[in-house]
Structures are given as structure tokens and as C-alpha cells.
Image (cartoon, rainbow, N blue to C red; front, side, top):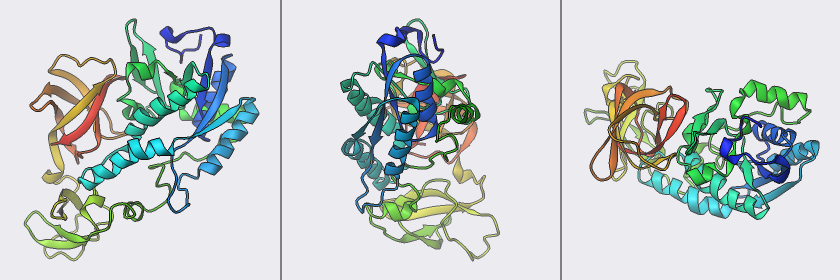
Length: 372
């Protein structure tokens, strides 16, 4: 049996129907290839998640669905399409806007995986007779004899467990991840060898619903621009910003600070903001103490196993995607929060982002950073 199928999900391939989440990219294309080659009954399902209000689709979904159709025709797999833009708006984008309005920096990919790809999408796939759903995520899942575990993808440079940390046991039991044991280079090689048209297609980056659009310009359509002062830590006004909600801690680009008396040549970074007063605070130097913290607090933590570990416990954590694992201790705090204390100082801990916990390659779970 294929090593990408957890032991407790093993079934006779000829009696198991797997629906492949087709995005039009190379990862989902090779996922479809591997499922088909494993002998499963299968079909593709493309989901549209976004409707641009001005008709200019930043996701280029029409191009993507055409690519998905071409791949499915090459592999002789039927393709269906579904529109989940209403669900995405209500369960992902609305929260995204609310978090920005509060001055936090949300990560919509985490919520999209939990609420759309592994909930609304799976529900639709079930209606189309799916027993399991296969996605092109670079992660692995295993059965440890009692429960499913979520593991980093073999290619750590592409590992996406950070974005899947809030999945439940039920959601994991509905999904398989065929490319989790491959490197990106191997995925492209397989696609090219099999004559798949997306073998050299550029990876999508950033937030899908923004596409190539300038972020501030996009966000201004929903959160009106309101200029205000940029202050240094001594209370001097050193510049003007375009709206405190648009900036994130640690941000360097787009501040437009220059000509400050006795300031030196070090670059300026956002070190704080007061959304109520519409003020941005900035300081100089990438290692400025105002950017560094050793602890954070998180609430509403979800655990892959469904059960919280015994506190306190030592593990490693990431406070942003692609960050190297950071040694830390997790302990209970007041108000149903957990306190995370790092061995080393962390730069730009950002409320609204996720902190995700690991033991070696196993993802334990995570939550949203509430404060430092």
C-alpha cells in the first residue's frame, strides 16, 4: 500500500473513491497522478473561492480551472467545479477584515484550510461520492496506533504543516497527502515525465484573493484609508502613514521615513501601533530591543490529537511560516490563555498570526497570538 495513506485509512483501492482538490498547479496535478497510479477510483474537484467586486479576478481562476481541466484530460480523470466564494467570504474574509480593523495581522490561509478546504470542500466532495479527499499539501499524516498525527513534509522548504495546525482528527481522517513524501523538484520531474502541462507552472504566492494587486490598494476598498502620524519612541513625529491598520510589526518597506535629525542611517521598522489613535510607532535597527520579545500569549489553541498536553511542557514553535523551529516552554496562564516562553529572543511577534507547536517533525497544534 502507498506510504501516503495512513494505516487506519487503508481500503481496497478499487472500492475507494478519492476526490482530488485540483487547483490548476503542479502540486495538485501530481497528486492526481499518484492517486490514479495507485489504482483508486478518482475524480477532480476545482473550487472557486473568490468573486472580485470589480470583475478583475486576482486569483485568475478561469486560467487555473483551464489548467486543471487539461491535467484531468491528460490523466483521464473527470473534473467537477464548485463555487465556495460565499462560504469563503463569510467564514474567512470577513474575519480577515475584522482582525485588520482591530490592528492585528491575520493569516487567512490557516482559516481557509480549516473552514473551506477541509470542511466545505470535503462536504461537497462527499456529496459527489468521495470516501477521501487528496490535496497537494506538503505534509504527511500517520496513524500511531491510536490517533492520526500530522507531520512536516519531507521537503522542509515547502512544508505546510504551519497552515494545517488547526485540523481536527475528523478532518485528518478525511484527507490524504500524496506529495508529502516528495521534494518540489521531484514533483516537477514527475509532472514533466508524465506529460503534465503544469510541470513548469509558477507557484502561486501571497494571498489568493489579492493576487498581484497592491495590498494597501486592495485593503482600502474595504477599510478606508486614514492617514496619521508615525512617531519615534521619544514621542517625535517623524513621518506620515496611510492608515495604522495597514501596517504590521517589523515592517520596513513603505514607511517613507527620511531626513530625521540625528537619526543616523539605520533603517526604520514598525515596532508598535495604536489603532484607536491611528498612530504608528517606529524605531531604527533590525535588532532594536523594541522588536524583540521572549514570550507571547495565545488563546483558543487547537491540538491535532484533540487533547491538550500536560502543562508545562517543552517543545519547539514557529511564529511565522518558514521560520526555523524555536525552542520554547508552553505553560498555562490566566483567562484561558497559554504562555509561550522562548529560549531565544524572537523578532516581531505579531498578534493575529499563528504560533504552531512541534516535537521534531510532528505538528502538535497551535493558536492565534493574542499579545506579548
